[in-house]
Length: 290
Picture (cartoon, rainbow, N blue to C red):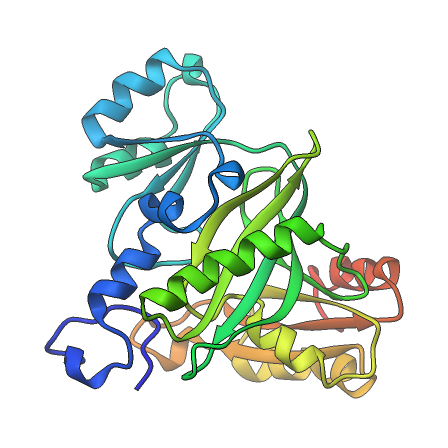
């Protein structure tokens, strides 16, 4: 059985997993990027204890990205906070992150021109394959919104493709098997950097795989929180699905879980002939699909 995250022994015994929990913990710990990536591709960063980080941030002007250096994998922006202007005092999310961690990676916030996720697989014969590349859609505040697919994705530099492949090959040599994502970027300065690793299926991986079977040149994977019931949400996307403008990937109804009533979340691929048409449709869907 292939687990994407480390589980407690009571939930899933280590012997039942394809990968050892210690390897998964090592690969997903943000502090271990320098072990896997070539030095020239690593952003300016420092590893500090929580207490050290408070004093260090007060002395060093930002902006900085704070990442929890933990053996537990996560996603969706959890365990990450931005420190923009220390003169105005640290934001609540920064202080909360510092309080919750023993160790923190403090990384210089990159001036990014193009932000890619390189999706890889490592099979049982240790063959490393590049499944595809998506361009990540991120707000100025660092919130991940989705990813571009197909011809909408700018072609990454060959040297960066090679560097990301070497990184995954090193992980494969340690025993990793399965899917993983390498986040890397072209900076405004012209430099290329690798800044995050996720040794699991990534947010845009299912969409990337599905898009390959569709007869569209461009697409964008997005997710939306809709203030409606599951039935209403399903009805709202029906027209877009029937007209082949939207392919749903997942629908989450919190009312069907222990979380209780809440907004229904829909994720899927907005489809179109070019980037402009897709972007316009995605913006329209922010206020509803009907």
